[in-house]
Length: 207
Length: 207
View (cartoon, rainbow over the protein chains, first blue to last red):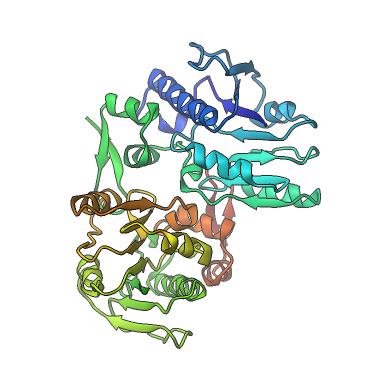
């Protein structure tokens, strides 16, 4: 199965700007990408990183190729979909994802299998329907369901907290400190982040 | 298996105060409770609602009993744990939970099976270790793991987005509108809530 990991290489993760400066956001985004690449490889695939710009450093895995495409996410991903192979698309900001989670997606025989993110996004998907095209704008999970149904394609949803947890906002960092164990967690700990248990949901603070 | 659904019946869901007044929060909390009661029954159990005050209206299910205990959540739940039966504890603010999700918890043979919430909470759990006691303060997921390990008990974590999505804050309401289908979603729609797709995660607005 072809596997694509879209990656925003320039000015990434702007919603983390209150806790990380530009260089830190770049380094942290790269740590998350490395975690996802390793997970996809562990699940038995040879991922292609679909990056908006050349990577500063090559990935550690020799089996990983990089395609640079600076067009919007939707356009770039659709250009990678081919009629001759199912395609796995996994976002680069899912450091909690495990190989088991990827298996849950790829084991599904539905024409379109979706792992929704919090807030209506589509964090990972497997596309087996050649006519299907992605559209990541807005509540893409609902749009992807509707698009599949319009094509007469079967749809399945994978219920995974780990795949649902894309890292966009400061509070999301707590999920990595609570549940993570890879490069992204190590990066956060080295940068001085720790859990901050106030009222309600646990957040993060920085030393 | 004994099953407990703790329910805060008085001044509940204060973090929703910016979008729901006191009476609305009470009604919406009750709609969520009803959804969870139905789910637990559908999963084959006879739930006991552990409420901080008498319910205004009885539950629709005759097989559901209500115990009133106005002590703090941790104390009240621990008082319900008995040595002679495993216990399922499911929070009342999980309207996305399905019977399948409950099965994933109860099928586990671990001494303690945890479904973490976003932000480090424990949204649902099955306790088979008689010496185990809950502690819902702070990052309870980590505390529960540590407590189980201290007892030499085995621990398993269920990876479910639906069980992870407790409804505490306005943005959480979007998850119900996107993924829900029961009483809680019907209540929100009747109250005029709809999805609001701006930048980033989809939220809600009220007509």
